[in-house]
Image (cartoon, helix red, strand yellow):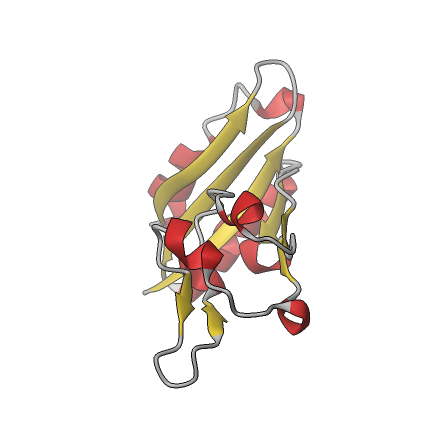
Length: 136
């Protein structure tokens, strides 16, 4: 079993289809909704964590794309300008998910994208504005 996080962008016409139910029933994928921006009759976005067999997740993502849902792995949507970071640690104070931590060995900032839940608290916490999250 693996876990993968995706941002899904839904077109307006997909609101009447039980797409997440199909993922559970037909592909044996567990779904955890981490963030949602849904507007009836308009586009919607979900940040999902999918858990299941690798091949089932791949088939499930293919199913979604066949229904005009844009599926993008989360790590492509989080931008951190690590090379400009001064390792002040401000962002670690607000990161409740534990994605941002300070290394105890060298006091350098460490960013684990796999733990990020896109809460966006790091954005105002960073004095150099080094975080950018594209949820749309």
